[in-house]
Image (tube, rainbow, N blue to C red; front, side, top):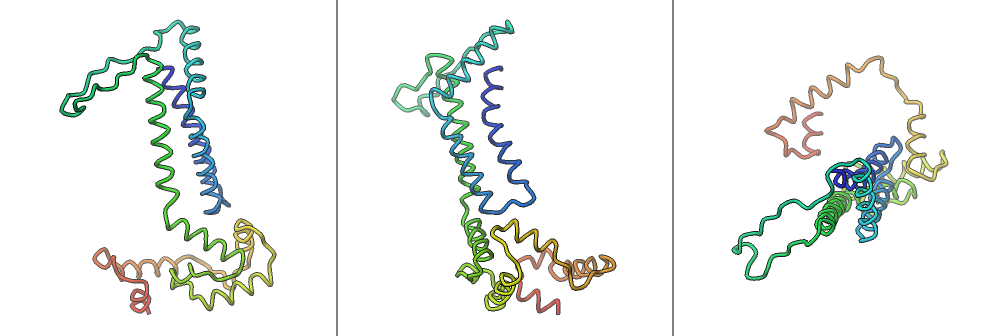
Amino acid sequence: MVLGLLLAKEVMMGLEGLNTSLQGRGKTVGGMLSAAECVKKHFQSQRTEEAFNKVYTSATELVTSLGIEPIKMPHLRKPPRRHAGPAEPYVPSTDQEYYRVQFFQVLDTVTTQLTKWFEQEGLQYLVKLEKVLLSGQVDDVVDLYPELQCQSLKVQLDMFKANYTYGTCSEVSEIMRNMVPEVVPASSAEAERSFSALRRLKTWLRSSMSQTRLNSMAV
């Protein structure tokens, strides 16, 4: 139990730091991917004999000082031969060897899941869009989003760069939050009615409707 808690702590501390980082108000997609990559490298560095032995030694000392049941390996059953094949199944000889394998499996699972979720193609497109916003140079990635209207976007980016100074997406976000809107609505009733009308147009049976057709029906 003590060893399991200490090993879990090693994993959860890294994930908790990533979780806190991703929830930052000014977090960008590029920053999010960098944070995930940093956590992955940390877990990969923990997948060593030295890192595990350090935790195992701490757990052993804590168990001794508390006078509780020492760390031991659970009873293992040999897998059926139809599953294991003709080869002799692997059986760890010591409790330290058993828990080391378990710890490495957890680290491998976490690293695999981080890779799965943070190396998706869609996130790479968003990183390119961030670069378009910062550089003002319209890239081919804009063509993937017809609603951005490439020519109009180029003009708006040129105007934005001419009137404001920025170097990061967080600064762009702050500028936009501080911009005075042209019209300040007195209430949210109009927006709420718009969403109600939108729901009547795009029902669950029309969920595959394209953005172009939806715009046409709304007009």
